[in-house]
Image 1: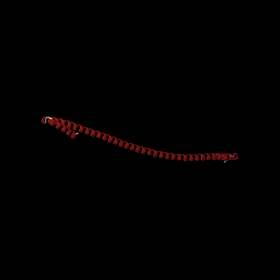
Image 2: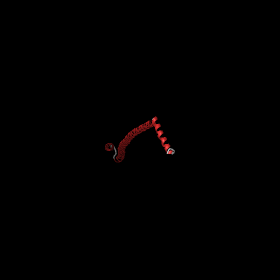
Image 3: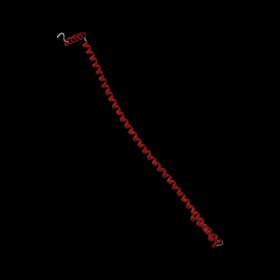
Image 4: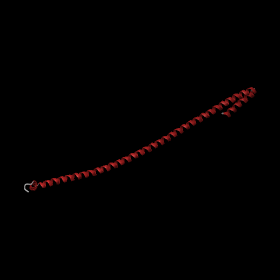
Length: 161
């Protein structure tokens, strides 16, 4: 038994453990493991805290994005309404402009028509006077003719004008 390698390995192991126990190596190892455990726990806590902060930021940005989308939609809706209002206003102004122009044109046409009628009447009166003068001048002579012609011309002028 004393010559076997396993015996000496076991003996060396026991002696080594006794030396470690005497010098307090087990306390140092446990202390190092405790420090490592504390450091890992701290890192886990920091990671959990950062994860919670990231989740809050994500939620905040989602809220902001939704708000921005709502605001953009409101802007688009208001721009469409404004464009429709401007288009309706322009249409109304155009219709008013066309109505004014039409009324002005109708007024000018009526005025030209009245003027044409007056010109035709004047021309007809002049023609009638000339015709009456010519006819009366050939059929009636003397002072009676002059009186009749003057009276007839005055009557024609008053009736035609």
